[in-house]
Each structure stands twice: as C-alpha cells, then as structure tokens.
Image (cartoon, rainbow, N blue to C red; front, side, top):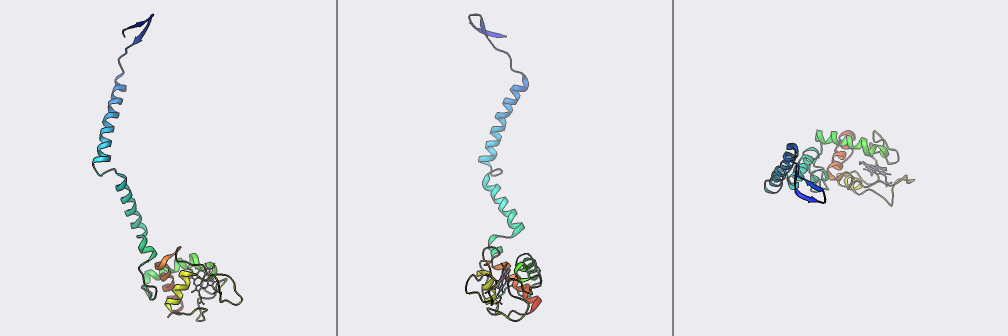
Amino acid sequence: MSNDKDWDGIVQADNKLPAWYVWTFIGTIIFAVVYMFMYHVTDDWTQARAFKEDVAAHVEKFGSSSDSSGENLSADKNPFSGDADSIAAGEETFKAICAACHGQNAEGLVGPSLADSETLYGSSEKVVFNVIMDGRMENLKQNPPKGPMPAHKQSLGAKKVWQVISYLDAKYNNIQ
Ligand code: HEC
C-alpha cells in the first residue's frame, strides 16, 4: 500500500502496522499510566517505602543502631551481669576478637591474663569497661610493654563490651 506521495517515482509506503506491534505500543502506554499511578499516587512503590522496609528488615535482623552500640547504657554498672544470653553473646565476641591477644581462655598472650585476679588497671566494672571501650595506647602498664590495647568503642559498642564483661565475670569471677 502507498499513499499519494510520489517523488520522481519514489513513493512513500503506508503499510498497516502488524497487530503485535500496535498492541506492544499500546501496552507501553498502559504500563506507563499504571506505573506512574503506583509510583507517584499510591504509596506502594515509592523509594521512601522501600527504604523503610529495608531498614525494618535490618533492625529485625541486627537490632537498631542504638541497641547494638548501647549508647544509652550505663558506663558504671553492667546491665547484663549474670544474664545467660549476654554471657553467651559475650563469649562469642571474646573468642572472635579478644582471644587473639588475650588467649582463648583469657590466659594472656600479647595482652595480660584476664583470668586471674591480678590487674594492671583495676577490677571494677567501670574500670574494665573503660579500658575495653577506650583502649590503652600509651603509658602502657605491662612490664615489659607488649603492645597497646585497642579501643572497642566503635567496633563493638557499649552493649557488646558489657556482654564480654558478663562473660569474663561469669567464667573467672574476678570483676567487681
Ligand atoms: C591487639 C591485641 C589486643 C586485643 C585484640 C585486645 N586486647 Fe585487651 N589488652 C591488650 C594489651 C597489650 C593490654 C595491656 C595494655 C598495657 O600494657 O597497659 C590489654 C589490656 C586489657 C585489659 C586490662 C587488663 C588489666 O590487667 O587491667 C582488659 C580488661 C582487656 N585488655 C580486655 C580486652 C577485651 C575484653 C578485648 C576484646 C574486646 C581485648 N582486650 C582485646 C591487647 C589486646
């Protein structure tokens, strides 16, 4: 089929579009309308909602950030003292992080033994908490010095540090 246009014998074709092509085209229009409606009018597909759901899923799995860092926890008294779940969680943290320097059974390695009743800094909950949170980088007390004690404020946060203290105290009964 051709329309009337004829340029020096060259005619412009005017073929009927195949049905699949027309319907695909109409389909894209319908899709666009539905998509715009879902995205901008209803709340079903918005980024804000997707973000909220992701955050909720994360909190479900790992607890909220203030939970895990324990920003609001006391720095003087162990809120998890004697709590079985905390002791178990503390053991895990100890074996994964502290044992490298203090030994699997806290018998001492690069860092001093945490299993006995001798201490460099003291054995009150408050002192132990601060040493672990802030670390000790200078004026080291081991003689001869074997290295610094890294801070765990950022990497673990108050909650996990208190849990480790729960574990150590439950096992060695040497923290007051
Ligand atoms: C990189 C090695 C290293 C890691 C990891 C480490 N420590 Fe230490 N820690 C040390 C050293 C070294 C000292 C002694 C610092 C000094 O000489 O003053 C120390 C000291 C301490 C003290 C004070 C001991 C005392 O006698 O007063 C405590 C408590 C302690 N560490 C607990 C922990 C806990 C709990 C962890 C895990 C969260 C940990 N440390 C991880 C090396 C480490």
